[in-house]
Amino acid sequence: MARERTYTWFIEPKNSRSNEIVGKNIGEEDALQDVVCADEKKHSLWRCPSALVFMLWCSRTDLGIKIKIWCQEGNGKIRDAYGLYRNERGSGVKKKKRGTNNARF
Image (tube, rainbow, N blue to C red; front, top):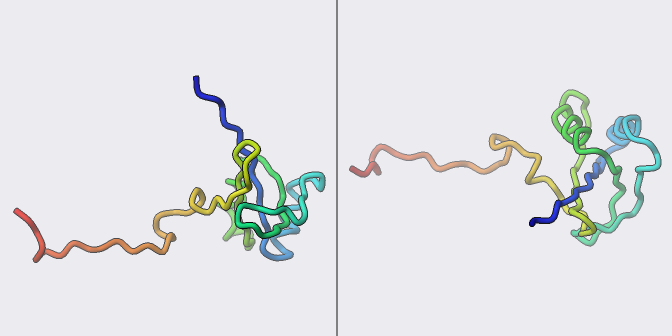
């Protein structure tokens, strides 16, 4: 039987406005200072439920906030979760176009 995985989600505000908005939605007891993450750098994070992470990520443009999303699986390292929260259009990866002269029959 597979073990159930538990995830803890974190938001890192990138400016004071973002910090203010995130702080209004999360209690101060969930504020973490100088946390060493998987990238071996210190970060100031807010621990929050996954639903709030999703809501803030989807509303970031409308709210005018800049945030970074982090995730911890079980007791593991806190890792950047950027790959989970990006859309295909904004990923910066261009797909090659197929030319009509390269068609195979």
